[in-house]
Length: 131
Ligand code: HEM
Image (cartoon, rainbow, N blue to C red; front, top):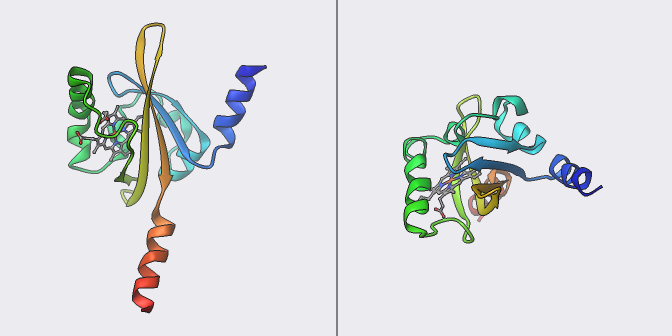
C-alpha cells in the first residue's frame, strides 16, 4: 500500500529527513539522519531539533520558527540554505538544509531535508590548494 511505500522512501533516502511540529519537536526521523548525526533514531523523537546544531543557531532556532509563524516571512522555506550541523561527538559539518511546510489535522508541521556537504567542501578545498 501507499503507507508502506512512503515508509520505504524514508528508510532508503540518502539524505537525512526530519519532521518537526510547530514547537520544533521532532516527530519523524529516517536512518540517514541517524547515520549523519550519530544518534540512534529513537534519540531524536520528542527532542527539540535545535540539539542538532551549534550556537548561535541552537539558542535562536525556537525564535526562527516563532518569527516565521508570526510573520509568514520565509527565510529558508522554499529557498534552502547552507548551515552548520552538530554531530553527537560535538563535531560540526556543512549541510544544505531545505525546509517545507505541511498540515495534518489542522496542525502545522515542517520537513527538513539535509544534505551533507562535507565531502564536496573537502574536494573544493583540495582543488583550490592544488592550483
Ligand atoms: C529557520 C538553522 C534544522 C525548520 C532556520 C534559520 C536558520 C536555521 C539559520 C533561518 C533564520 C533566519 O534567517 O531568520 C538551522 C540549522 C539546522 C536546522 C543550523 C541544523 C540541523 C532544521 C530542521 C527543520 C528546521 C531539520 C525542520 C525539520 C526550520 C523552520 C524555520 C527555520 C520551520 C523557519 C522558517 C524559515 O525561516 O523559512 N533554521 N535549522 N530547521 N528552520 Fe532551521
